[in-house]
Image 1 (cartoon, chains in turn red, purple, yellow, cyan):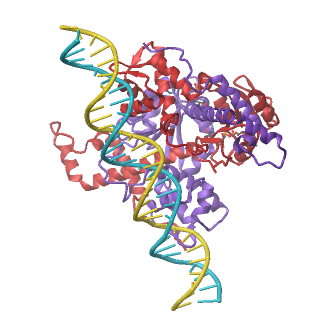
Image 2 (cartoon, helix red, strand yellow):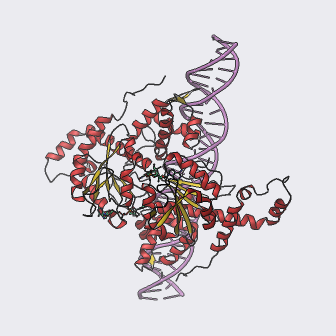
Length: 285
Length: 285
DNA sequence: CAATCTTTGTGCACACGTTCACAAACGCAT
DNA sequence: ATGCGTTTGTGAACGTGTGCACAAAGATTG
Ligand SMILES: NC(=O)c1ccc[n+]([C@@H]2O[C@H](COP(=O)([O-])OP(=O)(O)OC[C@H]3O[C@@H](n4cnc5c(N)ncnc54)[C@H](O)[C@@H]3O)[C@@H](O)[C@H]2O)c1
Ligand SMILES: NC(=O)c1ccc[n+]([C@@H]2O[C@H](COP(=O)([O-])OP(=O)(O)OC[C@H]3O[C@@H](n4cnc5c(N)ncnc54)[C@H](O)[C@@H]3O)[C@@H](O)[C@H]2O)c1
């Protein structure tokens, strides 16, 4: 097991979340804060309040303060947080004060893009090697690094002390590549292939799945269309009255009135898909 | 506002989560189930139990059953779920029975990779257009599609009824591109730039952030190293005894004993970083 | 038809995450 | 020193998500 997103398998009998145990949700937000703080630091802003920083990171200020409270009391009441100091503390907590060599396996479209990505090195992540199984790809270079053959994986992982691997192979090869990475000693994997990886205890897997993100957006998009259809059906008279009563009238359905073109498009969608009670194409036995 | 991951701003006065309201966590798993079910469907498997399907999707079977219960009672007790029927129901719920035209803005490294990605079209997502601001890029083609100029954005969005936009521009341009997409009528955005986007109510934003994923992995990796260091410090005598007592002895510290080479690497890390109580580089005023 | 076996659907308890609201702490002015 | 305005840190309430455990429902067999 140990596959999905919040799979931190090494949860062996921890008492509660206090006293070194930072909640997973908080950990996921720390990089966000760090990014905002780094921007402030570059503008030489000395201190920042929870309200300002929260706004810059796109979160609630109470949440931010609670998040920071897990790290310790690094703020000053009446003033705010010291930017440089917080940058250091968060970096340390996330383990970014050390070097993290990373291997990328599968140098196709996506692997190339990742290899070229500058944001990699900016936070202590160093591309230790690019690997591929295809002899046609091996020997070429991407972003100044040579693409090396999978045979070298074990040596590279050992020599360079690699503990993080990125998988950008086709889905069919992902599990096999994953097994090999784990056997070689990699204990954290970032998987871009649309595959459920199974790994032993103590190995963390996170996945990035474009297709899932789009499907979630589509779900909400469909829901929005359905809601607007309901609204339009429920009060068409009121909407017409508002439209014809001139500039002095107040908007009756503000959300819909803002973007009338969109509303028309969504109504078409809602009509096409059948928001509810559609006849299934296949009936169960 | 409306920026982070689970930001579904259109939550205007909904009573509870029942009666059409599917929990966000469930929505996020539906694509996973769908993928597993599609694979079964291609192997012509007629029915599947919650246990089997859960295992294939990498989740708990109780969770899966509860997830499906939000969609309705589509299973048969004692048998399981009809694969084809479930595929249809989930597809319909996610809105995949209709066509979703998508525009990709910023055809650089990542934009190219996404344009070439086959998994896009496989689920009703059609690339309606590739857009870029750079005259050197406009006019070239990627994955058989021409790269068009940003000036055409508004026309394309209207003509093709686009409601989903993908942003793969540099971070500095992301907010500006986002604003323009929203003004043109796009109401769902998938953002690959490391930027916090602010959008009006009714617009959904999801972000994919490689750097954050790596930082989260680094955090857990560091934690693992710290734990192993503690273990090794707490019971070095026991470990030595086990190592020297021959093949008849049982493992004392199983997790560490599995991959001894890794343990050495982690201990080195733990020593280098200072797991706790490090002196800060900058002190607060 | 009854007995048995399998598997679903869900009530319930608990864990986790979010938000409110406010006392305590601090800087600063007087 | 004292008071005032500001902002942190956190207790407490609430909402969401997870997983156990089991009754009910259907299949299957005799
Ligand atoms: N391209 C995208 O935008 C995108 C988006 C989302 C997900 N993905 C997923 O990312 C993965 C890679 O996508 P891509 O477009 O780069 O594919 P690609 O075919 O361009 O590249 C895959 C690379 O992996 C190599 N490879 C195959 N088997 C291997 C093995 N056993 N060991 C090592 N290397 C091996 C191939 O030689 C090839 O170079 C796929 O799983 C895809 O579904 C891609
Ligand atoms: N490459 C990766 O693997 C990777 C990984 C994670 C995140 N990202 C992020 O994704 C984004 C794109 O990365 P990339 O490597 O493809 O960058 P890139 O520089 O290769 O491509 C960016 C493209 O955007 C275009 N562009 C710039 N300003 C624009 C504007 N105002 N309107 C329209 N187009 C505009 C540029 O012409 C260029 O073609 C960046 O924000 C990067 O941080 C990239």
